Every structure is written in C-alpha cells, then in structure tokens.
Length: 330
Image 1 (cartoon, helix red, strand yellow):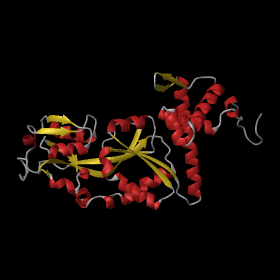
Image 2 (cartoon, rainbow, N blue to C red; image 1 turned 90 degrees about the vertical axis):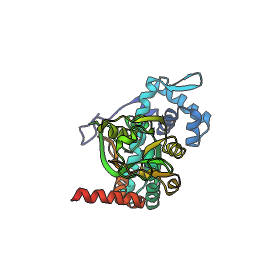
Image 3 (cartoon, helix red, strand yellow; image 1 turned 120 degrees about the horizontal axis):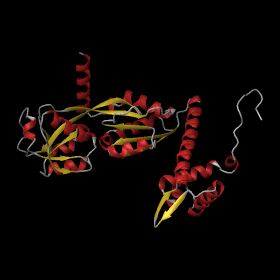
Image 4 (cartoon, rainbow, N blue to C red; image 1 turned 120 degrees about the vertical axis):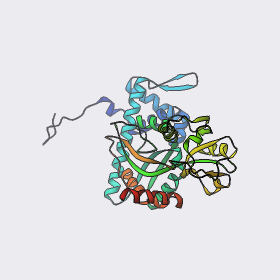
C-alpha cells in the first residue's frame, strides 16, 4: 500500500512492533560497558531490570546478543551488529534534539571530545569556559594517548578529536588548530644548562626520556634526530608527561616536551635548553572521520575553539604563537 501523494513504500518490520527505544538504550549501555552492573549504574536502574530488558530483547530478535566466558562478557556477532545500529540510533536522536533546540535558539545537547594527553593541559580550561557560556551543553571528555584516540576514531565513539599528528588518510578530515611548540628540558644542574645554541649532536649521547611509541611528541623528536642524521639515546619510555618531568628533575636524563606541559612550578627544578632547531614547531589538529555529520553542538564548539583558544594559553606560549603567525604573514 502507498501513502497518498507519495511514491515511497511504507517500511514494515516485525521488530519495529517489539523493540522499544528504551531497550536499545539499555543494550547500548551494556554493549559499551560490557557489564550489566555498570550499565545499570549509568542508567540508574537495578541490575535485574537491565538483565530482564536484554533477555526480552534477545527473545524478540531470536538471537543471543552477549556471551559469558568465565567472568568476561563479550558480544556475539548479532550483538556487535546491534551495537553499531543502537549507537547510530542514539546519536541520530541526540542530533535531532540538538537541532530542535538550535531552532529554538537554545544551544543544548551533548559533546563527546577525545584529546591526546598533552592537550589535557589546556583543554579542560577551554571546556570550562565553553560550558559557562553554554550551560545546557553536557561535555564528555576522554583524555588518552594517540593510539587509543585512533581506536576511538575507528569506532566513531566521539564527536571531535584533538591530536598532535593525525594519520594520513582520505577517511579523515582534520584542520590545524594551535601551535604546540616542543622544547628540550633538563634538570636545573644539568651540564648543558646555560649553554647557548647547543648542537643537536651534543644531545645524541644524552640519555633521553621519551613517550611511548606512536605518541605525537615522540614522532616529532625522532623526526628531528633523523633529519640531522642522528639517533637518540633512549633510556626510558614513560606513558605520561608528569612521569617524564619527575624523571628529568631526578637526573635520569633529558626530554622533549610540549611547552603546554610546563607550569611555573616546574621551573623550580627544570630548565629549557637552548638547542639548535628548537622549539620544534609542532601543531595540534582538530577533526573527525570524513563524512561524519557534525551536530550543532560540535560545530558550535569548533567555532569557540578558534575564537577563544588563543586567549586561554599561557603568556609564553601565546607570544610564541603570535610570533609564528607574524612570520607567516611576512
């Protein structure tokens, strides 16, 4: 049967009469957390209620969605397919709600943002100001390393991503954001402290503390040494910038760090060395998988980032950014 005035056929599905949006929401939470208990806590339900909803959903579909091996829950093939669909449904409904609010002149909804750990030194402040201006927007911030950012990107878990070096891919849409100057730091009593224009070759023999493979800072450091025909003397890999700063101040070696990670308190124990070719002009990029339809909230945040981001930077970094911009315009 056709609708009057339309050539489109009505969509018929037996599952449409059985599955509710609430069941999809419950399953999405279970699939994401791989835990009935955590899903129940997230949705403010009891665990038996969550279990009952999933059991009814499995009965209606006619297939198991989860399986338990020991204490570990995993999704069946049907569960994986329904997870992707349920996430799309939740996102479309949230996007529709935000569009309606936008038409009413109300900026509201949810923003999922994933950033590399280095950006954590300024991103929360930027988000704080953003939430003050748009109090009806709920922000979920994920801070992790570059490898996990790429995993989240492949699963389309977030609205926007802030990374130091996006992978080269036609499937991604990233634009440069802020300059992220990288400097060489050492302990206060280091032998090279106070020397001017130190050749990079003098650092090749110095023990180097460095981030894990795949991190943006490490990529930039290894590229700088390789360009000079040198190989860094890596002494230790550490998973976060604070551990690296502690190691440097303790005399374990030198490190290349973002200026954004250095606070006034750090300079009681650390110094920035004057090294040829440094600071390295690294950048942050903001983007998302190509073809992703950005929500009103995500577009609003991107505009805010470019309008207000520079003003929130520390003075020494802002002056560096402004100097580079002036040089690029000459």
